[in-house]
Length: 207
Image 1 (tube, rainbow, N blue to C red):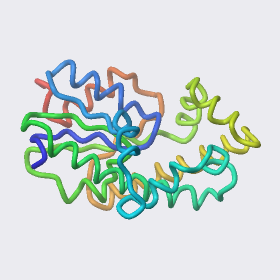
Image 2 (cartoon, helix red, strand yellow):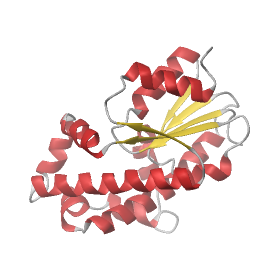
Image 3 (tube, one colour):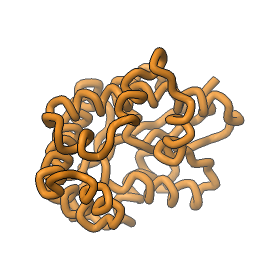
């Protein structure tokens, strides 16, 4: 049984999901489940039979992940990877006590979360603008180590950004098709303003 209520924060990278989830959890005494913080644990438990895409991609080096494959293939395998990992996320959630929790991560695709939503749950997807996302990625120090492990860091970065831009558009479309809430993030609103929007959406704000 998944805890309730669950406040789901999905979307694409560099939209502020992690920061906003931390702020909400701290302010309202919620538990927080960040999908990426459990990724290494999940990868240690995958099998070719149950998680074939996770198994295959985890065996690739960064050159294979971001440079050698076409962007369309990168996107398709990334979505499948997230779908497989989402099942492991649900397994983790089912082992948590029945108390409010905010869950955030790219793994929360609208097509996966929508069938699980209950009356007491709330969900929103944060979609970064393409230019904003590229700028935020460029500021992350860890990305440079990954890119330097490829044959052509500049081309690999371009592939990565195209993949994530396509992914963001796909997530937005999935959410809109299901009449689920989307917050577009392009830097025009401050973190505090986005936090206030999420508070109102989740019914946590006194306003």
